[in-house]
Image 1 (tube, rainbow, N blue to C red):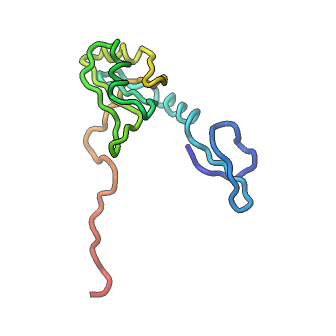
Image 2 (cartoon, rainbow, N blue to C red; image 1 turned 30 degrees about the horizontal axis):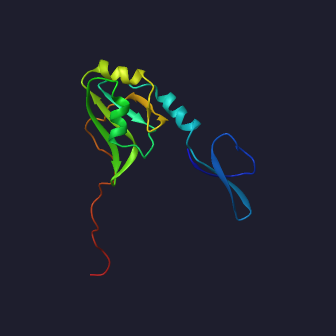
Image 3 (cartoon, one colour; image 1 turned 120 degrees about the vertical axis):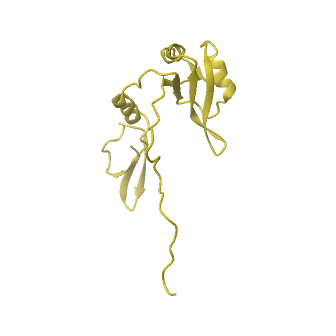
Length: 146
C-alpha cells in the first residue's frame, strides 16, 4: 500500500513512487499501485462464475459507447453499469449477461476498451444483510452550560 517511509535508497526501484526531502530526511512515497495491487488480486483468487462480470482498469476517458463497441462480439448482454461518482466515470463497470455461458465467453476473451487492455473477471458477490459500513452514530447532544 501507499505511504511514506524514511530512508535513503531502501526499497527504491521495487515499486513506483516519488522521493522528497522533509526536514533533512529523505522520504519515499510508495504509490501502492502495480505489483502490490496485482498480488492482492492473485491472493484473493478468481471469483466463482456468475452472470455478472467486472471490467476494471479502464481509462477514465471511456464511455458507454466504448463498452458497447468492445463487447459487441459477445452475445447476451443484459445491462452495462458504469462506475460513476459525482458524474465522473471511475474506470470500471459491471456487465450483466443473460447467461453464465455468455459471461464466461467475455471473461475468457482478452479485449481493449478505449485503447487499453482491461481486467475482466466475474463480479464478486455483494455482502448479504448486515451493515454496509460507515458511521451511524447519533447527533450532537449538546452539553456545556445551561
